[in-house]
Picture 1: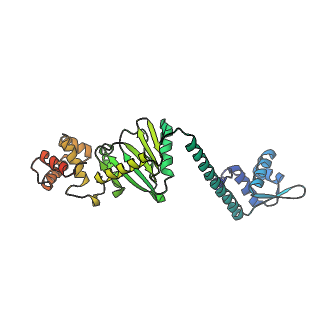
Picture 2: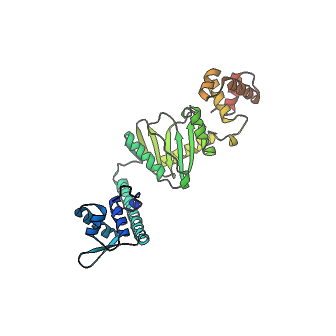
Picture 3: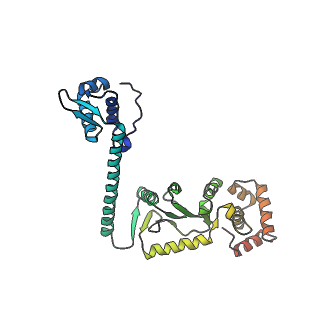
Length: 308
């Protein structure tokens, strides 16, 4: 056979590439015998017979009586429909089995409202599973240090995200820009108390150093949800169109850095802007807060809750 074979298209339905290859040969030569197929494929007789048996079991071919036996390919449209139906049935059964296993796990795990997960790989896998199986909502408190890297959100699947970043999470200008693309669903707050992911308000994951604590529906999870909502009200939006008060998020961040004692040059490096830009923005901040010194501006911003 020619080496430039078409890319397999039936693998997702449980058909291996060699089964599909023989099926394609059979489509081009209906009523073929095993000997014909050996000649067409260049395979050994044992190999051809093995894949013929597979095609028969998959419903992709049928065998006609008589000697020598001849093989007829199933119509592709009907064959694919049958394979897809079997795949759907297998998925339904797998979900039922998963539900049974989940109940067994819940009934046999140690008494208490939580489970402790250890190890980088196990923690990363559980974070991934919780977000990938979320149906409606994911809430995130994001703070360093990170034992598990974040994953791509699932907004495309109708899952809504709300994320509160600790200011220390957004150090580089690129990180700030990436977070701002999420608009009003992302906010920033100084001193986020813990790393948290909550999926559908039923599963909570709290990262504590090198351990991950998983919570199910419980009073403890309810308390964490109330904490998230409280922090959400206190946090500052990263969306420039939704910023409230006289200072934008960028101005609040700049003022916080100045209040921490950083020089204009250090602030410029931190924010990825020119030093002259920092000086100009500081003058605008002083005017907006009716302050004459940076210390006075920081004090007034803090009193108004404008510092991130």
